[in-house]
Length: 108
Image 1 (tube, rainbow, N blue to C red):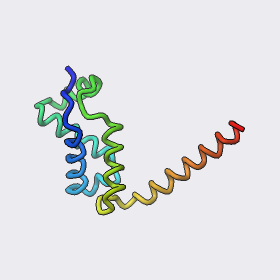
Image 2 (image 1 turned 30 degrees about the vertical axis):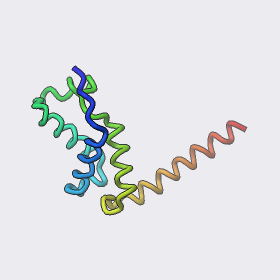
Image 3 (image 1 turned 90 degrees about the horizontal axis):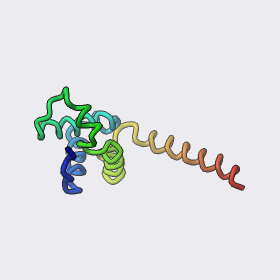
Image 4 (image 1 turned 90 degrees about the vertical axis):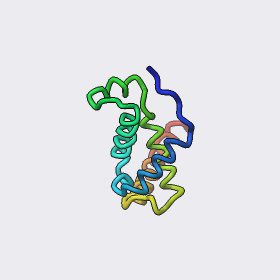
């Protein structure tokens, strides 16, 4: 059974609230995913032992979407950034630069 699509802003508002209220999620997006999925399970009265059945049937918010919204909210709201935010930004840019330089040589 597929979960009904919620309004686009629902997950964004929930993620914003979790980041605001639980600072430990600011550097740990997997903890955020757990909290989001736990919330969805609670609202829908899904027992924890049925998590994988529902997860693999795509009945919860998409993990990649949660991570993208988490990053976007932190980008736009500096007060919701974790202690490792700048480090993640630097290392992400370094990886991207390395990939681009590596593949540019192969292309030309």
